Length: 198
Image 1 (tube, rainbow, N blue to C red):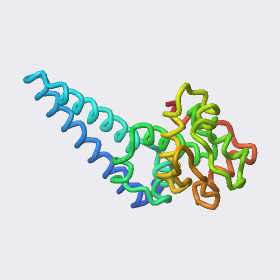
Image 2 (cartoon, rainbow, N blue to C red):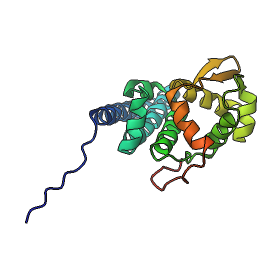
Image 3 (cartoon, one colour):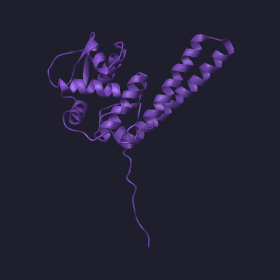
């Protein structure tokens, strides 16, 4: 007796995003090796920095490509392309992974700083005021505004915020904001084991 079970088909947008992220990650790894070889031969510190930069972005690009199909589908649904993600900072890539994996399973991201910032932002839902980096920094429990600035950049990448000097304004009707609102406004399921710890 034969069974005719079908494996669910991965959407083309997900396949494309994964393949393009893998290709860009490989390109970074190759560039890292080239810069490292030059640095080894010449002792050039700039080449060493370039090697480290490309190694870091190659690793994070590979992590983005390795997200679950559901998380990649979330990223693609917000119009993110491999080129856009590739151009983002490593911190934005880190937040992207945590937040897309969380949205995919309707759970808070397994990223304590992002979770604290998002909980604060949604406690102020719709107030129309700009959020200062200093205030978000305090909510993230960081010493400087650097991480708050990264969070602002990430939210802008998703179309969830507009950058202002020393602050940002949330775009409360953005699709990703609506998805996050569902998690932060109502009791959400606890973070699932599939969501990566960053």
